[in-house]
Image (cartoon, rainbow, N blue to C red; front, top):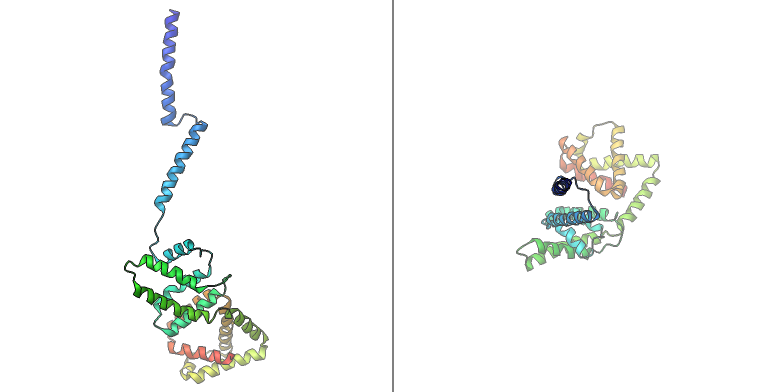
Amino acid sequence: GSADLAANDSVQDKSKKPKSWKSGWFNGKRSSTAAETAENAKEKTASEGVNDFRNTTVPTTYNEMFMFNAAVMGFGGRTWMNEVLASFDIIVSNVSNSYRLQEECDILSLRMAKRKGNINLAEYKAVMLASLRSLVKDWGSLHEVSWSWLWENVERLIKAQLGKPALQERALARFLSSLDEIGMGTVKNEVYAKFFALAPAGQDFFKQSTTRLHFIAEKVIVMTLDMYREPKKMVEDISALGLRHVGYGIPTDLFGPFVTACVQVIR
C-alpha cells in the first residue's frame, strides 16, 4: 500500500512540473535567468536595428539632399553654409532681378559675418551641384552650366562684402556714439528735409508732432546699427513694418526716397 502511494505521489509531482514550466513561458510567471535576459536583450536590439533601418529616409528635397551631401563630403561643420541654404530659394527666385539679387546677397553677407570660421564659397558650389545632380533626373550639361553661372554671380556679390560688415559695424557704432544731443537733433531734422525735397508727396503722410517725427527718425538710425548686429531679426522686423505701412495706405514708391534721404544725411 505504501509503495502504491509513493508511486502515485511521484506521478502527481511529474504531472505538476510541465504546468509550472508552461505557465512561466506564456503567462510571465517564470523568473528570468541571466541567459534569458541576455537573449531577450539580443532580440530587442535586433528588433530596434530593423526599426531604425526601416525609418531611414532618402533625401527628397534640395535642403535635405544638401545637408546629406555636405556631411558626406566632410563639410558638416561649415555653419556658414546654413545661412546660404536658408537664403538660396529666394536668391534663385530673384536671379533675373539684379537689384533684388544684390540686396539678398548683401543681407546674406551680414548673416554670414556672424558665423565663425573661414568661408570658402567654392565648397558650397561643390555641394550644390552634387545635390542637384542627385535630384534632377535629366541632369545634363545645360543644367551644369546654368547653375554654375548662377552661383558664380552670387559668389561675386558675396565676395565683395566678405570681411567688411564687422568693420562697417564698428565704424557706424563709433559715429553714432559721437553724436551729442544737438548733433542727433540735426540728423533728425535733416532726414525729413531731405525726404520732403526728394518726395514732396511724403509731407501728406508725416503730419504728426515734431516729437513723434523725431522718435521715428531716431528709431530708423538705431535700426541701421541693429541691421549689422542682428541681421536675421531685423529683416523680419523691417518686412513686417513695410507690410503695416502698406496696410496704412502709404504708397510704396515713397519707401525708396525715405531710405535715400536717411543715407544722404548720414553720409
